[in-house]
View 1 (cartoon, rainbow, N blue to C red):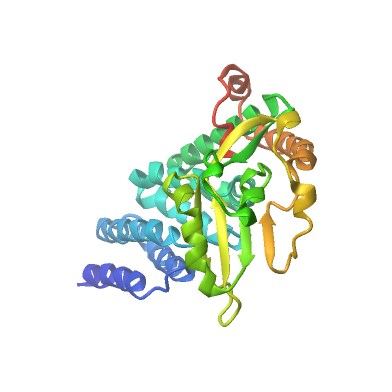
View 2 (cartoon, rainbow, N blue to C red; view 1 turned 90 degrees about the vertical axis):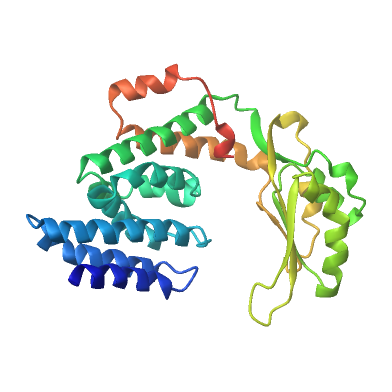
Length: 302
């Protein structure tokens, strides 16, 4: 009976959890970890923990798909999650690695791999050590690819079918390779027309666009996001950042704010610094392997 009760309690936590929040997922993991000490030498309790963990891991992955904010307060949660996988659900390790590689590199993945608590928790088991090792090598390879590339070539945004848009309002943004997003405060009644003007680019897979309201009762906004990147030399970069500064920032925001011509050198120096930090976790053989591997996936970092 106790087995059924604990398994059902795990299911209930996720059934009534609030989408977009991680706290209820952490509650489920905490419950399993409180039971865990009593499982040593007790096959029945161990079986219960495995069942609860299998349910929890699957539900956590689903829950993480709708969490859009990537902040450092999630480090504690990821630390518990990787410990849960390492102790009870080793089959979920590849799924965790795939998920982690999709995290924002600078905001989440790199800081996470440098977080002492996360590394300590992952290193408590062979499964966790292997996850940590593969993710660290993956990130080091990405960074090495970036710092080894031509410094005059950058990853820029591109809209191959920009000519299909007839709107003068968007043309400058679409052709500016430094900008990814165009976020405009505009009347809600105009959004359908704007969507229609951009539909050809949406259908081509060049952009996404949507209407949204950032705050309850606040002004509606219309945001365009470019989806494709390319490698381009700085001397032929299509840039209109100087004229873009004429926009009223309260009504129109373009991201990133800074021009690629200005940020490319700063980014390269930062990539060098991050690579040196990750090398501290690699073996001499793994470090030599970075140079021997072919350059790949540079666009993953931008």
